[in-house]
View (cartoon, one colour):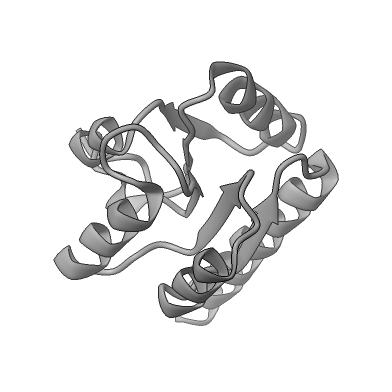
Length: 130
């Protein structure tokens, strides 16, 4: 079953980080659906999400490959990468995929929530003008 359009998807293999990210968004009233792997996210129909928050390094398919696959199959939702590895190739790949932001762990909950809120506000504004 596809993800509802007003849902933010979090793909993060670390349970504590996944739960903390979901809580940060919930405090702002943002609904999130979480997945521990890219494979689970692909099976969950994430292409229709309002925003993707994706860890770069995941077991199995990487976060970068996940987003490349979604982009090949259609439209990639607005994207925020999260990573513990602040490496130039990560930033280059993120730019190539059109990521709105790359947040390096540990990042503040406020930075994450603000980035997501900005994405959702822009999407809402565009929908109102369509």
